[in-house]
Image 1 (cartoon, rainbow, N blue to C red):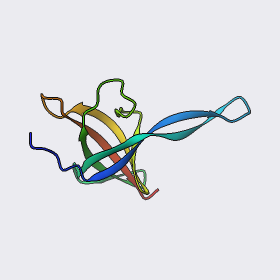
Image 2 (spheres, helix red, strand yellow):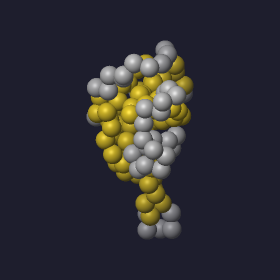
Image 3 (cartoon, helix red, strand yellow):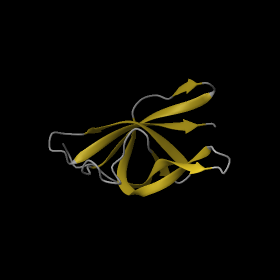
Length: 109
């Protein structure tokens, strides 16, 4: 595999539950770290419930299992005002040097 052109600095965010003081909670997002990545469109966008969804492939350097900045399907990336919700993560090649995150960007919300 060729070296990826990691030219976008993204913030990895994880969900966090915060008590609302009335016995319930609200969900917020907490930054887990910054990563350099290559972001590519995977396919044509599609409309679901009046919101366009752009499918993306995000390549980043691999991190060991359990590392705080290793993404999983509960997390999301933020690129300024843009948010990419992670759907799946896999190793990009047999050497394990890169991860590929399959994500969607919600547009028009």
